[in-house]
Length: 125
Length: 125
Image (spheres, chains in turn purple, yellow):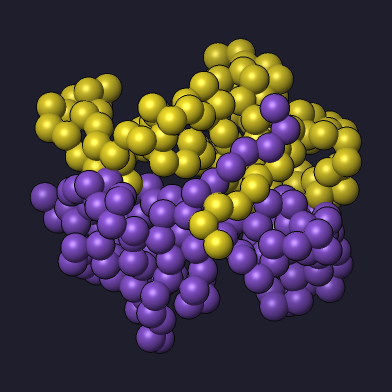
């Protein structure tokens, strides 16, 4: 086995400053049960604009945004250009309204497909 | 776009107590550059034993291992049975020797395919 298939469960439907709305497909609605009792979650998303052979062949990067001048391996970075175009961000859960999950601190562009969400810890219960 | 393809970059080749060895395919070797200057990373891996229609259709779970008795949505859990069989664990980087990365605290079974690795913070530099 050398490949796997991910099925996108939703997408980023709105971004306003540091607040984003993730809309989950209705078929996954039950998977959101009790999500609103958590304060944080890790979101896996797809860098859909980097899902091509050139970006997926990138193995070293220079993270200039972080003041770096030397190359480093992609696995020692959060570069969106990497063998698997998956992003990972820990976000704050603001509210869950039906299939709409409003979060703070998500850095994915509007339109980015969502791969998975995993809660981190509870504080609201 | 409703699906994406992940290409496994390596696998878990040895597990001994809380120490695991991740062996990365040679073609991705350069991606490991400077990984050894970090102390922690997030590892994305594939729950290959749950990659079937039954496990991927699971939307609610009862996390009995964590003392729970009530069902909750999979996105409010770390259940390996979920729409996309991707696991996420933060591990300690012990050493990097060629394509072999030795880590502590990884809960993936031996043989699990690796999807991605993302360093968290430096402390060794």
